[in-house]
Length: 402
Image (cartoon, rainbow, N blue to C red):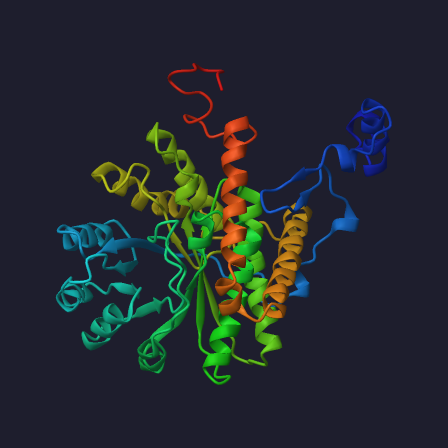
């Protein structure tokens, strides 16, 4: 049977010629291309020449599923109740911080360990208490202290507590590099990835070439496909770095947390959609652990929604049933490759500058972050960056106002 010409798929060249005519002979790949926040180029249409590139890297296709995570501040009066509620609603890993510095960590861990809680320790004191309490599984400690809890003006401290390193063989899953703090301070996806690579190499040197298991905590922001590509690139780059360091049993866990900077401080109800989008992004990117931010702070309804979002994504959307669901999509594969290459080059720049410690000490890192913050503020001001409820669709400007 002869195929109806109206049903035949247009070839890429036919599409280009039609669009070129509409654009009056301008190149559609140039005119319709979009730059992501980190500078990657997203084309309007992809063809075989931009086919899958993920197989260049090892480990780019992770297993399906993730660990649901929530941060609990042990300094809060209701920390135990919050942790118990989180466990009851399906949170499998509790990330423990202590902003007070005086919390009864041992008592907290002992009370919850009977329920099979998995802990992520963020300082040596919490880590030691968890191990003494024979916790079933201690997740990680960040030896580089780029904390998302630190204010923007606070310096990033590269000091490493020797006790954290000594405790690794005693049962810690991994040392975690928290790169999400850079995003909160104005950094982009490429800087996040480069920070992770440079941090691991810095620790590798300081530990006399002895490899440890690592985890990296990355923030997921508003650009869904760039963030998906970033998470995939992180796994790819981890494999590349493992080969470079000649580590046969290299293991890196990818942990994702929503970007607080992407949430609105006013009209907070809109953050429920943003937080859900961040979680979907993390799942599509193959994160091993995901933390969903509450949309309006630690209120009861916000915490419940953040916890049950995991259940919706698993039991109703089935996002934990497919490994690397975006793999093979030329658009995502190309973005993954672009981000991986850009991050590797940025990592090499840091190494050429004398390593991570020197990169921070010379002010180069702060310059990058300040530039990112300035660019974001300018984009919000001129409307090129739209945040619903903040600079568009606000109560004062009306439905179409800016």
